[in-house]
Amino acid sequence: MNQPIIKIENVWKKYDMGSVEPLVVLKEINLEIKKGEFIAITGPSGSGKSTMVNIVGALDKPSWGAVYLNGENVSNMNESSLAFLRGKTIGFIFQQFNLLPTLTALENVMLPMEIIDQDENKSKDTAEKLLNKLGLGDRMHHKPNELSGGQQQRVAIARSLANNPDVVLADEPTGNLDSKTGKFIMDFLGQLNKEGKTIILITHDLELVKYGKRVVYIKDGRIEKEIHN
Image 1 (cartoon, rainbow, N blue to C red):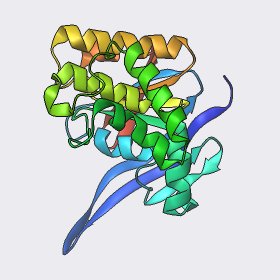
Image 2 (cartoon, rainbow, N blue to C red):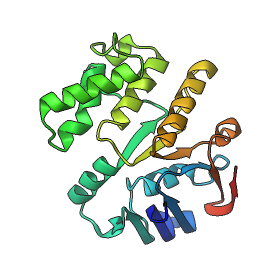
Image 3 (tube, helix red, strand yellow):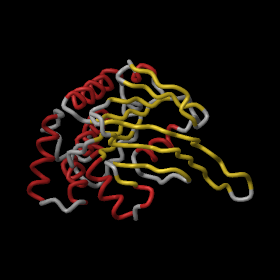
Image 4 (spheres, rainbow, N blue to C red):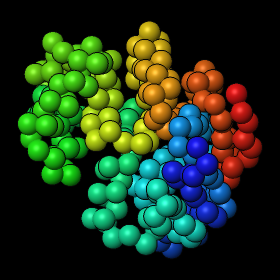
């Protein structure tokens, strides 16, 4: 529990806006996330949460500062090495599901395993087990447009777990769901945390924040405060 799985050191992120002044979105971000934590990152609209998703998830590199994933400085990695490390370490759940519409639920879950060249039979077996665990055993050959929003999000969760990542990063995972389905999703994330997964929840919903054992509040691109639930 002592070694941080993600470490962010003095990170700034700016976007060049052409002829106008650069837009500075994150300022002096310092954050350590340890293995097995359930951390919620929250703040008002425009506070920098979306950019934090990209930085914490190693989807984008900082303008200044360093981001370490499992002890490796991802700020200096080339994209192919970073993609491989990210694919094995972090599973992503997004508000919009981001399922490929031409693939079945089973094929969507198999995709991350194919990206890291896992054996196809093993990938299929893993995907089937994950979909069954999420109550979708009878829907695995359906395409996204044949599934409800809640079912699509469960497929997305199964996909996020495909490579057995240490970290699950959930960005507004219940934003498009009814309250009952949303509670199922959050309870499932809680169970994953009890099983040892590191959960990073990004949300503006203060009801969801309660699930986090540590809550990081962002305002105007800076970490304003941290509290422990």
